[in-house]
Image 1: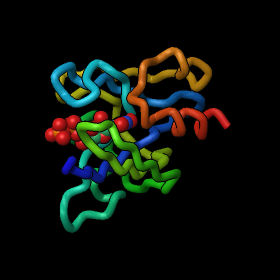
Image 2 (image 1 turned 135 degrees about the vertical axis):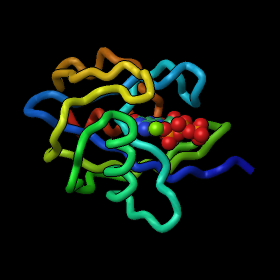
Image 3 (image 1 turned 30 degrees about the vertical axis):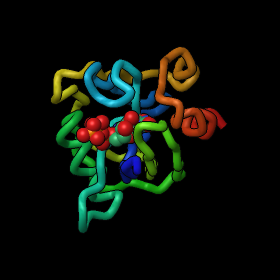
Image 4 (image 1 turned 180 degrees about the horizontal axis):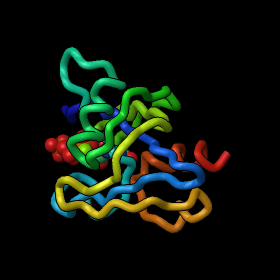
Length: 128
Ligand SMILES: Nc1nc2c([nH]c(=O)n2[C@@H]2O[C@H](COP(=O)(O)OP(=O)(O)OP(=O)(O)O)[C@@H](O)[C@H]2O)c(=O)[nH]1
Ligand SMILES: [Mg+2]
């Protein structure tokens, strides 16, 4: 049985730009660009998990997140439930705390990046 992972994902907006982070090569879907986030731990809401992950991963201080969409995807080796939230209010400057590359990208340029398969619907929503 493949494991199911509940992931809190943040689409972080600063005007017309969205924050992307590059997944470290050795991780699942490594080398691809992602929206920062991570696994929801027991007893946490998605929003709480996302706020914790965004501090740990990209050093942003977030107090509020807004549900955007949910995606179920089966990678074969792993099933993910992506619980995606908008993040529009934050403070601090984005920095890859785990050595990963992070970049603010204009919405119009997002399609030039290589994302995990499950992210297609997120891209469509951002651009709609
Ligand atoms: N953070 C994030 N994860 C995503 C995105 N799209 C997507 O398919 N995922 C998948 O969601 C899963 C959870 O990501 P994660 O950052 O918590 O997990 P991980 O790979 O660091 O941890 P693990 O290898 O110990 O399970 C990964 O399998 C990743 O491929 C995305 O845009 N952002
Ligand atoms: Mg992560």
